[in-house]
Every structure is written in structure tokens, then in C-alpha cells.
Length: 173
Image (cartoon, rainbow, N blue to C red):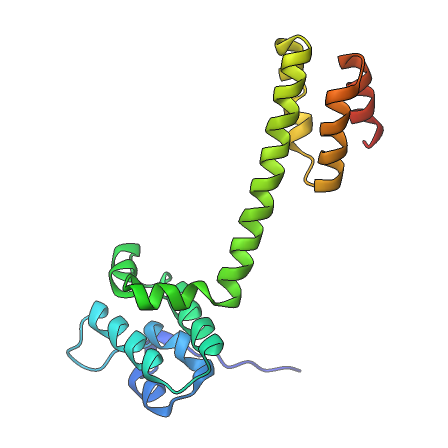
């Protein structure tokens, strides 16, 4: 039988984590008990400052600060977090984090997909009846494969009829 012990972060002394320098626990420190008499925003600022001052590789520091910021959203309101981390040097560093890079790449890919979808719609509306083309919008919106979207864009330019395009679109379903 496996036994678990529940640890409530909100009941653990956060200052001990900051003082220990345990890098893996730093993102959780803002969720822990602040020192007596310290308000929430000041505690968050102290956690960020301690993380910033630690002698870590730049990429590790970026990841730890990003994790700390994300987890802080469980306890602090967005305005408090933004006010604390909006300093330019912090934002620049956090943009370098692997998570921020991942989100940027995802957003870029979604933007490319959306741009191709809109181009397909526009070409079809220029060539055929716009009302009939709009009925295909939902079907086109479900496609998230860039090579397939590029193929459909080329087809939208070349097909002799909207029915021929619809057949190509239905071929993959």
C-alpha cells in the first residue's frame, strides 16, 4: 500500500526555502507563508529578488523566474504579479525561458495556420460565390496541418469550381 503525506505549501515557512537556496523549490516560495508581518506583494517581490540574485545560469534563472511567476498566479492577483515582474530586465530574461520560447513558437505556428486559412477563404471568395465559400469556413478552421493548408491554398487558386475544392477538402475527412 502506498501512503502519501499531504504538504500544504501555504503552511510551510517560505523564508526557509529562500534561505536554503534550493533552486527547485524557489518557484513555490511565493505560495508559502511569508515572514511574520510581511504583506503578500512584498513577499512576492522578495521571492523574485532572491531568485534574481542567485548565481544561476541565465537559462536556468529564466526558467525559475517564469515558473515562479506562473505559480504565483494561484495566490496573487494578476496586477500584483505584473507590477512585480514588469521590470524590463526581468521581462527580457523571462522571454528567454524555455516555456516562453515554447509559447512563442506555438503562437507563431497558430498565426501561420490562421493566415493560410484566411488566404484560402479570400481566394475562394474572389473566385466563387462568397456566401457559398463562407459555408466552408468551419471545415477549413478545423485543419491545423500547415502542409495540408498550403496544399489547399494552391488548390483554391487552381481548381475550376468550388465543388472541386469541396471534394479536395472532403477527401481527408
